[in-house]
Image 1: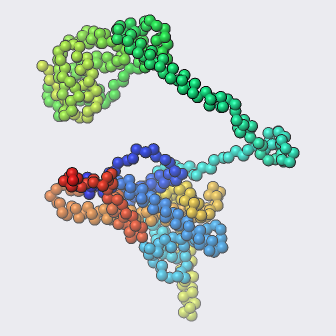
Image 2: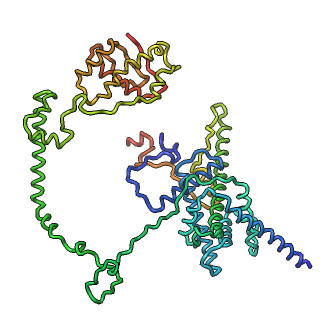
Length: 361
Length: 147
């Protein structure tokens, strides 16, 4: 009741199957673009996908029909190549549904047929709108390299009766059975056992790693005891020790221009006291940005130190419209850095026009 | 006499028609139809209409391809115009009914309904599904669904 009758086929779920491209897709796509251009000139502003596809398909079929009819008339006249008059006759055949002046006259001269006159009229009136893209000549025929003959290679044919200008035989390796394959087939069972052993080794090393991690803090992890664990750690990047601050160079985050500008601009929706605090918001967020740059490298203690040094603790609550992805900030410094990063992400997600209320307790 | 007059008239007429035709064909060289030549050439070749290589300086062959392109463009433009008229008629009818409410969205959209109505005159029957449902009970009353 609710969904059924209203939508006239314009909304339907797309299947999640991988699309297979057929050979005709390129020309169909070009036809769609051309038809869309024609319709735009006629006066349409938007199209339904299915309607545009249908019209393009019909245009293609029209071209096919004209070609078929023209070829038929050429063959009827005893010619292999079609000429302009064959095309006119083909167009007349297709235009009989609609009708044109002089259609009933069987013996009329083709040059004076109604179809031609209408066509001339249309060409004179219509404005010239060329196709939007430059198309290469298609379909592209692949150059096939012919197989080289015995003469070209310089070999002698193995049997006397074979002439030398025939293509050479393929290499024997391509059709002889190689001995290594057979050995591999018999060893599949042993291979499976070896795979199982390797997997078990990996699992054991992972368990050891976890145990070590829980026993001592993350700082001592790098100075692991067993060399075996180190090896597995080196091989698997996900199990490696977390990088410390300044160990690895991370590219700095460039603030997008619109965000820096719009924070400074006045928003008519926002309340008055928000305006006064806009600059202070940027300043307060600056340390959070810095923290984000070194996000992967810092430990929590260092972060706290940075925040506390640069500015006095200010408690503020940010609510952004309907959706608030922010948890309210508490007085303890431990939660401050975590809370500050969240509203920044929340801001990026929300609409630029929407601004939250800024209250200072 | 009469016959001669007629013959002369018809020959003059034919001459005019020929002149118009040759003029038109020569003007096709300067006119670039919206449908590209490569596309038309591809489909004409597919349907069997043999044409010598266009790359050579053969304006006759070029003329044929351009002629088909212009004819197809005319056909599509006619269908589109009919569909546009259908769309506008539908919008006018809606506006008549609800004048108090805000005016109907002025955007002209090519829909399947208008297209199928326009194409019916050209002998092309295009039928479109109203909606697609994933199981037979979609869109039924909730009471009957529970049963």
